[in-house]
Image (cartoon, one colour):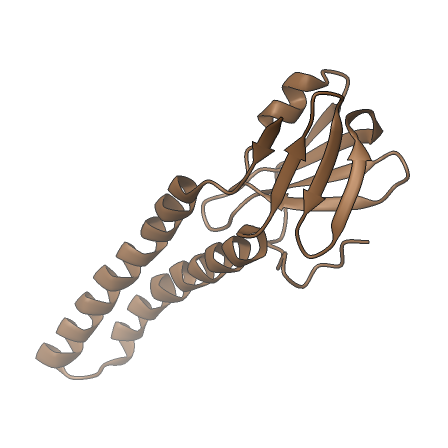
Length: 157
């Protein structure tokens, strides 16, 4: 039986990628305000802070969404998806997996579409490669540009 869970390594790497620049820009901004006084041009330091802040929000949101997610695959190809709702389906029921490739400021996710047209969203913190290896007939699509979604609020029928 294969068990797919969230990778804490990927979460920590995404988290530090966004947290360290926020600290650096904030310290630089405070240093400039302390030495020169508040000026309008110093507000340009708040733009990178807000960008990395949004990335940090998406990272934490996706971690909270997937931290309790477990995908169990038995030897017969039966899949048990345990998260907010429990779903049971067979490996052959997967029609297509659409991977939204992450750009620099957000986490990517994979939308698993079953043959009955229901969908399951999983963030990139869970590696789905074992599913692809077990069933090579699963179509894979890639979406290059996408708007970051809040997985926690997305309705998974």
